[in-house]
Length: 228
Image (cartoon, rainbow, N blue to C red; front, top):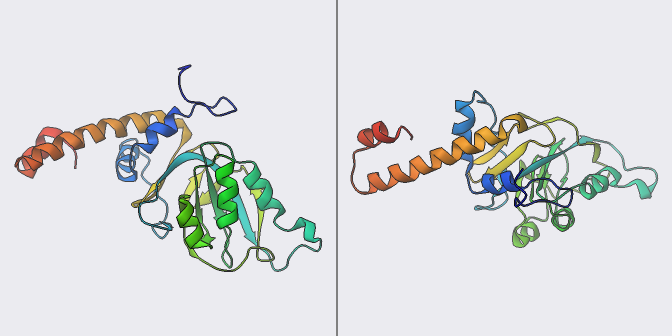
């Protein structure tokens, strides 16, 4: 283990996240394709709240289900949501599978998650307080916007369990990368191979781009570098 690698307070190696953050979703998708993982990009309707948002991190999963009433005891309001956010660690991306009918993410949850060291939020879910979240620059990727409060409409019932989000299976500890092209999930078991292959492809793409800019025909450049 590289003792100089960045770590969080629990001793987790954050170097893979840093490396992943220097990549982009399209090239990581190509690397996963080559490894036989061809269905790792989430449904295309999951989009950033603002162009240019990007996040890389470790999946911290949670599930929110539809409910038809608020808890009888007001002290129980948002209990699951509060516990889920309080469990976030540095480098985590909150990944949420949610039912419809309300926003499960907003300004205050973003502030709390950022204070915990979380890197961003991804969900087949809805957000609100859009202007505030965008202004604070907290990377947030969602299915849409909904002004309605989650209390009495949604309840977080599971934290840290495998989920399906945006059509992709996500296990706690998988890596997540999201940018303007979408959201991709890298299974933990192939994270190192995926990142290494994507880094190689980025290098080839840069060389090919330079030769194309110098006037080399595209077929010749493709024959030389083998990427597109």
